[in-house]
Image (cartoon, rainbow, N blue to C red):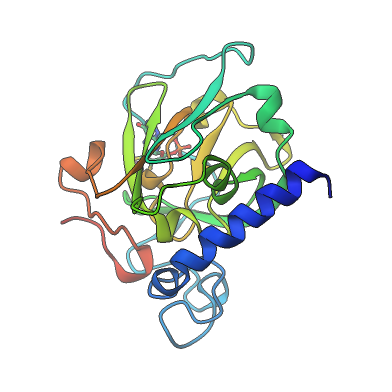
Length: 228
Ligand SMILES: Nc1nc2c(c(=O)[nH]1)N[C@H]1C(S)=C(S)[C@@H](COP(=O)(O)O)O[C@H]1N2
Ligand SMILES: [Mo]
């Protein structure tokens, strides 16, 4: 591990410690006891949350504007309530520790895509790099199409929440949010911004695009948290 990587790991562990108690109060996608009892989310029966149907395809859902961001212009900003705002180029992003994970994708419009193989960077890694101020509690994600969605830090820091550039072994297609999108397997898919551009740390919660329009702010599929 080089010096940069050990600094990232250290920052991540510190952040995790701060949020661990709150992280335990809501189910993670791969938690062994997602709701306090019972089998893991991904291996329980039924395999999908109430009201969901498994699809073999991958529908496209967005606001109808699909920005085409060339890699030379792509930038990921992490700012707001942080000690060290980040402006990461594509090269900087690929130099961060990379992970692979398999998880499910639950859309509130009732389809679920199972066992997607993702590659990318844990959201916790880029948040830790920017060193959130002690008063940071939430974040707003801003996408290149103008879309926004908010997350409490205890959800954003979970292990399967990734900034992905690869799905099923191929570069993430533009229509699914390439070059990079967020995925939130433990929450409905609208919580994962396609074409991610900016992660703004907040000192209080603020609602995103769908949350302002009546979608649930908690968005747990295993609790059927669809609309507020
Ligand atoms: N930037 C952006 N991200 C977005 C959206 C959007 O309109 N713009 N739609 C959300 C919704 S409602 C869903 S269900 C998923 C759909 O992802 P998909 O099109 O890859 O299936 O993306 C989410 N992320
Ligand atoms: Mo959606």
